Amino acid sequence: MIVEKTILEKLKLKLKNDLLYMGENRSIIVTTKSFSSLRKDLIRNIGLERMKGFFFRHGWELGKEDARELKKYADHSLEEIIQYGPFLHSMKGHVDAETLHLQVKDENGRRVILMEGIWKNSFEAEDHVRLFGPSKYPVCFTLTGYASGYVSEVVGEMVLFKEISCLGTGEKECRWVGKTLSHWGEEESMEMQQYLNDPPIVKELELTYEKLLEERNQLTFATKVHNELTKEIMKGNGLESIIQKVYELVGIPIILENISFQPLAHEGLSPESLAMISHEFCQYVKDHYHGHSTIDFHQTTKFIPFHHYFRLTAPVFLQDQVFGYCSFIFYDRSQYNPTIAQMVIERVASVCSLRLLNEKTKFESFERLKGYFLEEIISGHHQSKGDLITKGSFIHLDLSLPFYIGVIKYRFKNEHSNLELEYYAKIMEEISEFFNYRRLNVLIGQRAKSIVLLITEEQLKNDDIEVLVQSLLKSLSNRFIMIEFYGGISTKTEDILCAREAYREALVALKTATNHSRFVSFESLGVIGPLINSHNEKEVKKIAARYLGQLMENDDKNVELVRTLYSFLVNGGNLEQTAADLSLSVSGLRYRIHKIETLLDQELRDPVGNFHLLLAIQALMIMGELEI
Image (tube, rainbow, N blue to C red):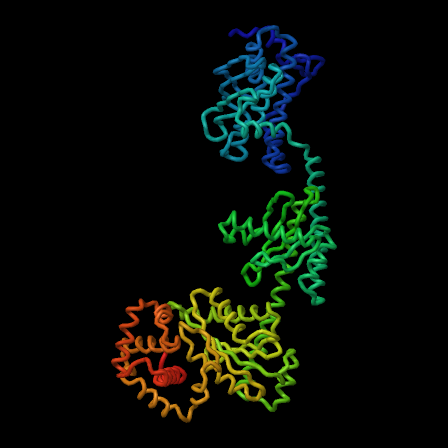
C-alpha cells in the first residue's frame, strides 16, 4: 500500500510562532533519558505493577489523540487508516514499526481486528535494559498502549495489543499481536483491561485507609470480646457463662459441642433448634468424612451451609487434641461478616480451650488428691476413724457409712506392653468420666498395677454394686477394644477402719476372675474366700493338690484340662453351656471330661466331690497358683 505523502506531510513536526506543532496539536520534544528518569521514579514511588498501567494508559491517550488527528485528513478505507498508525509511531521516534499481517472482518455486525507486526529499536525496551538489565517479561507498555489506543479509536471497538517477544527480554526485536477484546482469552483480557482501569492512587489510598479503619474496628471489637471472656475466666465462671457472654456481645446464636456432637453450652437457640442443629452437624461429618473427623476438618475454621441456616465452626483444642466445636449459627446472611465472625469465633474457641485446660488441671489435681487419700485409707496410715471421716467430708464423702472396695486390672490382648503408661492415664480418665456422668463421688486410685475404687452405699442409692461395676467394665471394654478388663468387689463393709480387709477381699475375688467370668464378687466365693489367709496357704495347697492329683502336673495340656474342669463345675455340669464358654463342640468336651475323670480317677457326677474340686481350683486361683 502506498501511503499518501500529503497526509503524513501535514502531520510532520513544524514551527509555528516559534512553537512546535504536529498537525494542529502543539508538541514538545522529550529525550529518552528524561523518559527513563520518569520510568525509574515511577517504579520507585508507585511500584512496578502500577507503573505498567501508568505507561499503558499514557500510550493509550497518545494513540487515541493521533488517531483523532489523522482522521481529520484521511478519507480512506479502515485498513488504510489503521496502517497509518505504525508510520505515525515511527515518525515520533518511539520505534521502527512494521505491520506483517492485518485482517478486518465483520462478526455479528461488529468489526473484528487481527494484527501482527514487529517493533525494532524500541526506545522503551532499550531504556529498561539500560536502567534495570534484561527483564523476565516484555516491557514496552507505552508502545502497546499507543497501538491499542490508536486502533481502538479508529475501529470504534476495543482492540488490545500485547507483546509476544521483546527486546527487553533479550530478543532481537519486539513482536506484537493485536486483537479485538472478544478474541483474547479471559485471563489475558482481564490483565490488559486492568491497566486501563487502575483506580487513581489517591482513590486507592482512600480505599486502603477505609479498609484499615474497618479492620481496626473489627480488631477492636474482637479484642473487646476477648477481654470480656478473659474476665469471665478470671472470675472462675464456667463454659455456660462464657457462651452467654458471647451472645450478649454479638447477638448471634452460639453453641459449644463436644467431640461426639453433644451440646455443652448454648445461647439463642430453642430446645427444638438445638437438637436439630446438633443432629445435622453430626450427619454432615458422617456424610462428608465417612464418619470420621479428618485432620483438615479438625484443624481449621469451617463455613458449613445447611438448608435454612449456616454455621461457622471452629475447633476447640485441649492439649493438642480436639475436644469439641464452637459454632455461630446464622439464619440471616446479612448478619454474616466473614472477617469479624471468624476472628470472634476463633477467640471464643481459644478461651473455651483455656477454660477446659483449667478445669482439667484442677480435676486431675483433685483426682490425684483423692487417690492419695484412698491409699491412706487402705494402707492404714491414719490417726483415727474420726480423722478419716473428717478428711472425707472435705471432698463431700461420708466415710461413716457402709462402703465397698473394688479392684480392676487390665491386660492387652496382644503385645502392647510399651503402651501401658500411655493407656493408664486414658483408662483413669474414662473411669472418672463414667462416675461423673452418673454423678457418683467415688475414690479412685492405683495400687499394685491395679485400679482401686471406694464406693459408699450412699452413692449407690438404689443401684446394685455388682451391676454398677459390671457396667463400668463393659464401658471400658467398649472404649479400649485392645484391652481385657477384670474386676473384683468386696462385701459391704461397715467400718472405714476395715478398708484394708475389704481391699483384700476384692483382690481375692479378682484372682478368680477369668475370660469367661471377668467380674467376681467376694460374696460369690462362699466359704473359700474367708478360709484362705497367709497362715494356712501351705496347708490349703496340699489339700488342693490331693484333690486335683495328676491335673496339678505342670503341663500345658493339663492346664487346659483344669480350665475345662473349672468351667464345667461353675456351669453346674451343663455340657452345652460349658462347650459354648470354651468354644468347643459337645463331643470334644465329652472327650475332655473323660480324660479328666481318668486322671482324677473319679466320675464328675458326685456333687460333694465336685464341690471339693471347685474349692480346690478357686483356692489355687486365689493364691496365684493357677491362672484360668
